[in-house]
Structures are given as C-alpha cells and as structure tokens.
Amino acid sequence: MKQDLDRRTPQEGSWAQKLQGLPWWIIILLLAALWIVYSVVGSEKYRDAFLFLIPGMRLTVVLALISFAISLVFGLLAGLGRVSKSKVYFTLATLYVEVIRGIPLLVQILYVAFVIMPGVVVVLNWFGRVVYATGLTPLLSFGYRMAKLSIQDMDMTVRGVAALAFGYGAYEAEIFRAGIEAISKGQMEAARSLGMSYFQAMRYIILPQAIRVIMPPLGNDFIAMLKDTSLVSALAIRELTQLGKLYRGRTFRTFETWNTVAFLYLSMTLILSLLVRGLEKRLSIDRA
Amino acid sequence: MENPAICEMRGDIIIQAKDVCKSFGHGRIKAVQGVSLDVMRGEVVVIVGPSGSGKSTFLRCINHLESIDSGCMIVDGITLNDEKTNINKIREEVGMVFQHFNLFPHLTVLRNITLAQRVVRGRSSKDAEAIAYDLLEKVGIAEKADAYPAQLSGGQQQRVAIARALAMQPKIMMFDEPTSALDPEMIKEVLDVMLDLAREGMTMIVVSHEMGFARELSDRVVFMDDGRIIEIASPTKLFSNPDHPRIRTFLKKML
Figure 1 (cartoon, rainbow over the protein chains, first blue to last red):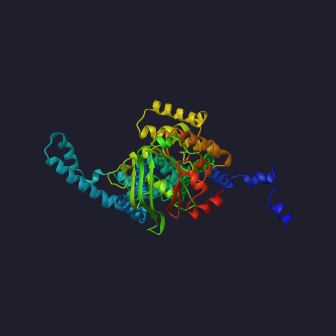
Figure 2: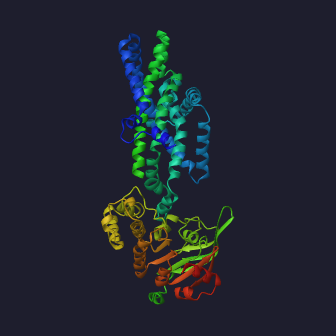
Figure 3: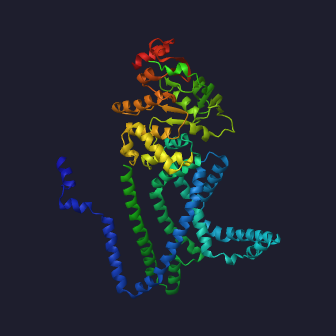
C-alpha cells in the first residue's frame, strides 16, 4: 500500500535519492579503469602489451574518420536517390542499399580487396592503354602510368577504406532518407511555391534541417565504424586488432593481449558514446 | 460591400481552368471533378465549401503542387500540363500562403523573406533586404526581422508568410485557409493584411471559412462540394439568396 511505495521511493533531497541519481555504470567503469591502470603499472607483461598496442589506435581512428567521411558522400547520394521521383535514380539507389546491406561487412572487405580492386586495376590498365594510344603528348605519361598499374600498387589500406566506405554508405543512405522524410512536406511545398527548384529546396531548406535531425544516428554509426575497422585486420592492415594478433602470435600472452585490445576499444567507444548522448540532449532541448 | 474597382477593371483573364480533374489513389478518391473557373486580373475570389470538397486541392492545382489528371489549366498565359512548361517560372508569379504557415524554422524572419528573392530572382542581398524590410513594415512586424519563427505567435508567423510570398512580387496570391490554424484573437491581424492587399488590386484566390472576409472583399464567391463547383455568385447573392439548397444548408450550419 502507500507505505510500501513511500519506502521504495526515497525522499526528496535525501542522501538515498542522491545515491540513486548517480550514473552508476560510468562510476563502475571508471573504477575498473583505475584498477586496470593500477595493474598495468604493476605488471611488466601488461605494460609491454600496452606499449605495443596503443600505436594501433592511431590507425584505427584515422581509418574510421576517412572511411566514414567517404561513406557520408555515398550515403547522401544514395539517400537522395531513395527519395527521388526518378525511377532510374531510385532503382539504382535501392539496389545499392539492399545488396550491400545484405552482405556481411567482412565478406565485402575480402570481396573488394581481392575481386573488385584487381578488376579496377584491369580497367585502369585498359583505359591507360587507350589514352596512350591516342598519341596526345600531355596525356602520354598519364596513360603510361595507368597502363602499368599493377595490383601491388593498390595499398591494402586503400582497399580497406574503399570497402568500409562503400559498405557503410548503404546504411548512411537510409539514415539520410529518414532525415529527409522527417522534414514535413509543407517545407518542400513552401520552398517550391516560392519558385525554388527541387535542388534549391533540398540545398537551402530540407537538407540543413535534416542534418540536425540525423546527427545522433550518424554519431552512433561512427562509433560502429570505429569498431568495424577491426575487420580490416583480415587484410593485415596494422590497426589495433591486427597488432593484437601479431602481439599474441609473438608472445603467446593471449590473456594480456585481448584484455588490452578490448580495453582500448572500449575507452574510445565509451567516450564517443557519451559525447553522442550529450549531443542528443542538446539537440532535443533546442527543438523543444 | 462589393469592390467598385472591379467594374472598371475589365482586365484580362489571368487564370483559366477548364474541366480540371484530379484524383488520388489510382482514381479512388475523386478530389476535383470537372472544375471550370476563370479568374480576372485584380479579382478577389473566395472559395468556400465543406471539408473535403476539393477546394484546397483545386487551389494547389493552380501552382502545380498537385498535377492535374485531365482538363486544362492556363496561368498567366502558360499552360501548366505542357511538358515544356517550366513550373518554377510560374510559381515565381503565384504566391502561396499555407494554413500552417510553413516558415523555414532554421532561418530568421529576414532570411525567410530574402532567400527565395536571392536564389530564385537573383537579387542582391541589399535589394532583397530592402524589399523584406518594406514588407515587414507593411504587415506590421518590422521589429521581428531577426527573430526565429519559433519565437513568434501564430498570427505573426502567418504575416511573415504573407510577406515572404509577396517578396517575390507575384501576380497572383493564393491563400489556403490562412486563418484556420490561428487562435481567434490573431485572426483579425492576418485578415487586415489580406484586406489591404485586396484593396491594392492584387489578384487573390482564397480558400477560407471566414465568411466576413468573403462578404466584405470578394468579387465572387465560389461554392464547392464533392469536387464540383455548385455555384459562383457575388458575395451578396451567395450569402443571402443562393440558388442551390445545398448552399443554404451549409450556410445555416456556418452562421
């Protein structure tokens, strides 16, 4: 009855209420981090692991940033296609989204690295030979370089970034589409009734508003991208996970290796996750 | 009181609609069924009728926010359903004011009014702003130029919307239930702006439930029901002695 309810809900301003209000999950993680740091400082093995693995974070972050940025370009183009009235544009965009979202990212990475890119090299070779054959002097050296390209010239890192960008673009496309559709029809109508073209309306009215709406989902996708960079370790790119594999292979310290790798990923994703949440709160206050 | 100016101003016909039909959902919902209407330059036409009668849909056919299925729509001498027609050009000349204002929330009032001027008409920022300030004065909210739409009341937002449409200096102004979403105390401020516009000789087509406005300033009132025009008459005739019984029933409910 009433007494039970009163007992479960602590009184206003009491220390019990303040205790309940704290973000316990953050506190626990912070304490765990402190304990880890303490054991690292004490343990020779952990210090060794950390020193070897931390440099891998740099490539992880760089890969995530570049791939995500490029995926946004693919995503915007495909997203516009998904809302387009043009049958051709809509069909192409939908094919891209459905096919790419249907294949596991790891498989896509291997596919791009060992099937697509060699194919691209063959096409560039042919293109180079055609350009060279025209005999036009300013194009000769360009044509020669294209014709002489071999798959070895295609850095694994380039292939990995291409795969990640292309793979994530399909997901960003749906986010862009949702953002555009979230903007009420009346906005487009008002813009068009003033004489603006579809593209002007998109550029000045719809997209600026849509971008605010989709920032939290994009933030979350960036965190996902950060984690998915670990998949390009399949191409022996020396990001964090790959360094983990190397270290473990060399020292057989399985426990220390993977604990440290997991800890380092977590430290990146948790900070970003808090930032995204803060952004979400600020955006919802503005809108209300 | 009829507008005396209309008797002298036998201007040319600026909107010609003939047998316009529009349906939704693969012909299931026949919104507009064979509507024919000619509007003359400088005329004020008010369209009234019950909900779902197709008034708003017909209005939206005039600036091609809805494409017509059949029939003919000629605006300012240009046929709308011709493929070669550049719709955007026509829309520059036909201003529209919406029931829910549709102001651009991420832009200030001033930028709301200058944006289309700059990117559609190609005016310089200075010219566009001068025109914007003029219009803001005219509708009575010059001091709100740097505010955002969210900070304004409904009546103020609608007046900004009217200024935004007028900034393009259109030949025709269309109003789709401009006061239906407003609190009663704000309706007058918007109607006053519309009255001024009408007195200045703007060609206006208004879909509205505001009978007072229709009576005072329209040259003709069009009564629509079920996608068709039932009667077109002068406001005095339509409101006091309409021919069709359907209209009588409607008026009894409204007044």
